[in-house]
Length: 333
Length: 162
Figure 1 (spheres, rainbow over the protein chains, first blue to last red):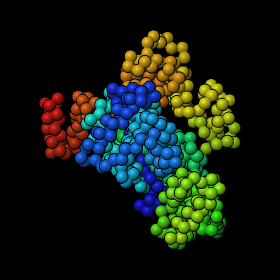
Figure 2: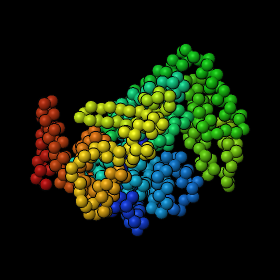
Figure 3: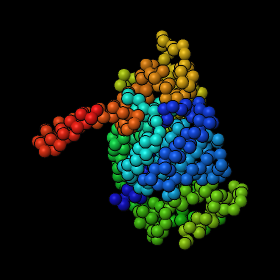
Figure 4: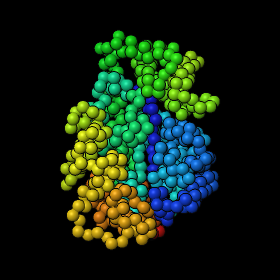
């Protein structure tokens, strides 16, 4: 379904696992942390059926490189702060990753484009099986997989989708919608996880509870809610075209104008304007730009991604100018 | 979403209480949440929210363990303050008091999901047999006798092995 691809940006499954014979990250020693990193790395990279994974130690990465990983949703801010204990195993295509010694010993993460929670679950449960062949996981018959925080106990699974909802946001219906879905045991988070704000009309929704239902059931529930949100967003887009075509066209072309010619731009402004243009393309107002990955552009304009792609340090002013230039070039080629 | 109390600011603190199956929700902005000390402690991280619930759940509890977890040394008070376990053994140590809290947070208190191959051991086989028996019943009800026979054989096989 085309609508689905336009509205659901990414799907992600995260599984939290812990080792039975080690203290949890909060209580463990550095030696234990190193042993867990080595054991996990060996369990995964010695398995012939799995992909190749690069091992990255948090202590070896610069702040900018860590922030790039955060902006790409590959690690959490908490892992970046873990310094001498945290590590990341990252597949070459960057779709599979394993955070080691974050809040839990192991957090398997699988990412995919569009609505693909089931595929992500299949992949992550396979990685989980490979790891379990070598590692002793903490498991309780009643409480399932034991996690550091009781909010993740049971399946240890968080299934989340990143939704782009410009029409619902522009027409001020988003708060009401998010409120009603939060009543259904679904958590709504900002772009960069708990406590972060929404940018570029992007919203992340995921299961709140992790215990008492199977992984399939939890995924099914999120999927059903996502289908309904897609329908609402689609219906609102149709209404915008029907009742407010002139106004919305003006907004969208203004956004395109700024992105095409502005000389300096903040992250927030860029995200918002790209969101408008993306909407314009999808409701048939903006012609062209068909082959542009605008969601990818939203990630590339994040501060650290921008700095990492340029030489040397940048001041905020230089960064905003760099961002405007980067967007102009991207839209032109 | 706007704050329930003042209706002005964006709600950033969401508290769900499930008491005897009755669910009540509160969505507050930080200012109102700060004023509403009965719901929250003074900071708003997930762990603090959680430990606030723990404190509420156990006010007036008659039994307190004198010793902490024998593996990591975490005491119940420490767990209550942090809202996090120190090791997997803490679950056993605190289990009797923990179960109602887990039910309060999660809405359920029994795992229904994946069972690991090695760590699950016999329990996995037992659960798999239960699932097959359920399928067998469904097949018989749907008069799919051939499929039912296959499932029956599979169950026998598994029971013989375990």
